[in-house]
Image (cartoon, rainbow, N blue to C red; front, side, top):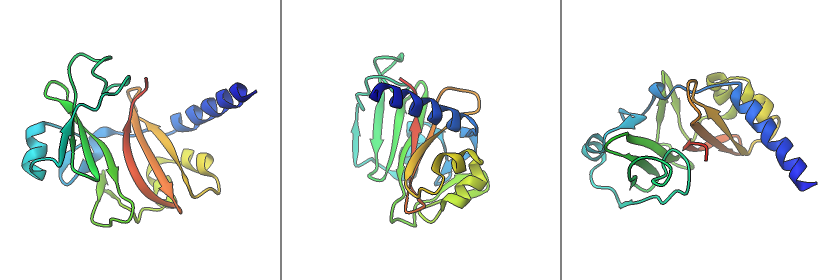
Length: 168
């Protein structure tokens, strides 16, 4: 019985997420593109707090399922993961309680002050269907031309986390 509920939940989530899309070319953080070179990142932010192999078992940032080794540049609330061959992706931004962190999506600013109403305005009504009256949760918004996307998490109706997402 639990499997049936899980399958229904996954299908519903997929359908709702598929109704809107994200364009990686519109995403910038601190004037860096969503996909950047390691050199660009280090020139902008300096040496990362930590640098490590993310050891993902699957997905587009997995050493095992892709051609090449991956590295995470960890700056605390901001993480970039990738390699020199495929560039680094803005993998995770923790926005919660930090108004100094701003992600640009086209002409829009995404910050810890961005509420669900604004996210719906930017990314479409699929978010309304997904969240309903809930003010907490997460949704995956797929790239318009690929299988990967971004995962937006909200808490108390505000954006708290922005993450890159890819399927296993």
